[in-house]
Length: 605
Image (cartoon, rainbow, N blue to C red):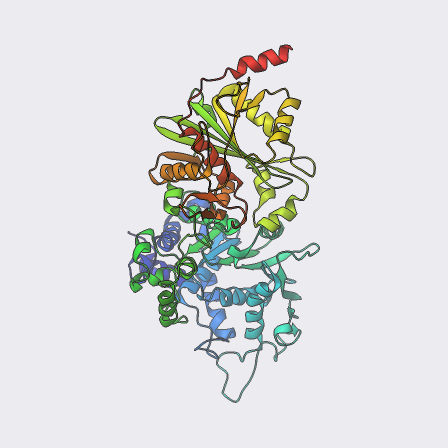
């Protein structure tokens, strides 16, 4: 790859990028993509008003070993020499600038395996931004899901302020604190704020739920994003950053999030798209350390690929630590899952996925309901009891494939509390029209009935498969909006007019009666469709959350069903998808109902 910057490279960002792309450093595809982005922008970034200031990059790189001391590990007491991956991050953030002289990057994403010294790097950058970036009254914050986690970064910063500064004689002690350059409020681990008197700046830790009036952040270090339950805190702080003049910065550090850790996954996916050039945002910097897909099958035995997710391996993180972790992971499934994700950056669920995760991801796509017109359609409905999620799924059979789309409903009241309890960004999903929030304290089934009525006007709906819970209340709601439905009770009972409702069993019991639907059969058919690539499921983070949360229970005959009690969160979308796909692949064949005529006649009456 010819890059004009290579011959003159003398900053840590460009040197690292060249070494990675020359295979002098073991790195995964996403790290290589970040390096390619850096070198590509050196060549043509000027066309977008971007330049790289090597002096600024060298200034931040020189700050660490000249002012800060390592406070933990084998090199405690030594000058804080940036690791190579540290240098790439710091030099990139502080070196790139816009034509107005301000820094290009306002948000930085760092995703690595555990133990790769993300927190000390963020702590050091925080101290630099607080007192050494020529900013008066800079407000710097360390945030996380809870106060204890937020204090990890903050305590690293406080420890560096208390440590003897580099290049002091053995009998000489001078720290940032003892010299008066900083003042630490509180003692030991009870410290709660660092001040820089000369500039009137401060650095303090906050939990993501802590309220602060009118923050004017110059620097925010958000740690362990994968553990955050909602994105509200990140969005609030980012909005505050965006309002600031000058060069504010938000650094996001995390391990690879599990597929059921929605907030972390959404941000990780965003920065992946930026890094790989799928979307362009010159204000975002990202570097993601993971093993590659081709490495995953043999990752436990292939030590050569381990540095792809652990850039500090062998430097500050001993390889023996990983070997012991892997030895245990080979013996315990639960340990294997956490090791794959937290150590090697593999995108697995925190507690496993109910079906092959790779197969699930491969069947995600776009299902445009307007393109399904004329195809046979089956509906599945999982009603909420009070104020949680209601899920409605439609499955069409077209072009020898199943096509499934799901709509979600909840209530506006208490949505913030439910978002926190369920570890899901419901308000953001409502704003993005991924969930419909109805007024009131409990779900109004009339909104659900109206959506089903609208589908029936356009599509050749065979019938709706339902969970018996609350179905009578749903039928009452249909009556209130003049939508004709009738409940199928058996082949010997008379048929009704309108949309036929067919009971769908929810437990592990197999039912052999005519027109009987049950969860073991539906799960088997859905699983087969996913594994064989015979289904397209409309991609939605709400559906992915439900899939990642789902837990399966089996009886002695291995008849399986979704178990809401054992599941890790809401699974309503998986229940309705199983119902609709089970119905679409069952042997029931009904004559189509002319809903347009029925609705038209009802309007005349």
